Amino acid sequence: MTVTVAEAQARLPELIAGLQPGEALTLTQDDRPVAELVGKAPPAPPGQRPPNLKLRAALAELRALPEFPPTPAEPDYLKEGRESGEIYGYVE
Image 1 (cartoon, rainbow, N blue to C red):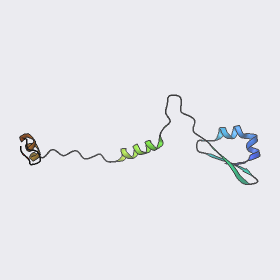
Image 2 (cartoon, rainbow, N blue to C red; image 1 turned 135 degrees about the horizontal axis):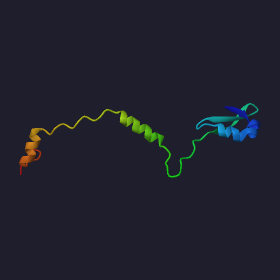
Image 3 (cartoon, helix red, strand yellow; image 1 turned 180 degrees about the vertical axis):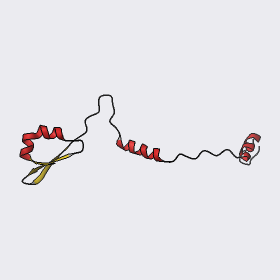
Image 4 (cartoon, rainbow, N blue to C red; image 1 turned 45 degrees about the vertical axis):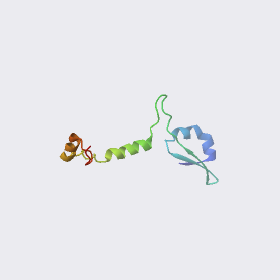
């Protein structure tokens, strides 16, 4: 939305109240942009943290990944070596 500086001076409270978060209001003088007002999100209520949008996006990407394959069962030769006390082919 674009308004002149004179119009903005006359209607500033109304213009600010109508701004949505992220929406820009450009002020012009002599048909040239001279300033821009951008709507901000209201502050979070006391005791509540504002949402971390980057973290939410990263978590959504992680949740979209396929599950890890299950861990394969331990091969018998490793199990036998561990039970006999043999470690990596070395017997004490």
